[in-house]
Image 1 (cartoon, rainbow, N blue to C red):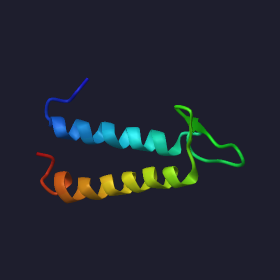
Image 2 (cartoon, rainbow, N blue to C red):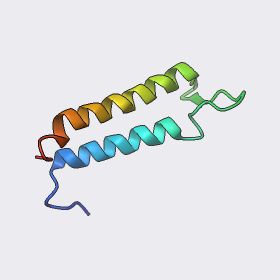
Image 3 (cartoon, rainbow, N blue to C red):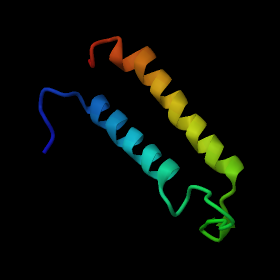
Length: 73
């Protein structure tokens, strides 16, 4: 149940972070051992996993630089 005091942008940020964290650290996607996970039939290599991690870090930086400094408005 959404909190009416929180803005819609705050909920979008929260959903985006949860999605990126789930994708980055999911055992089905994160490269472990000799197993190469497949996503929609394409091999999901360490390179793509690192790009996903970079997207997560960039999103955190943008969140702090834009939304959080404005007080969540």
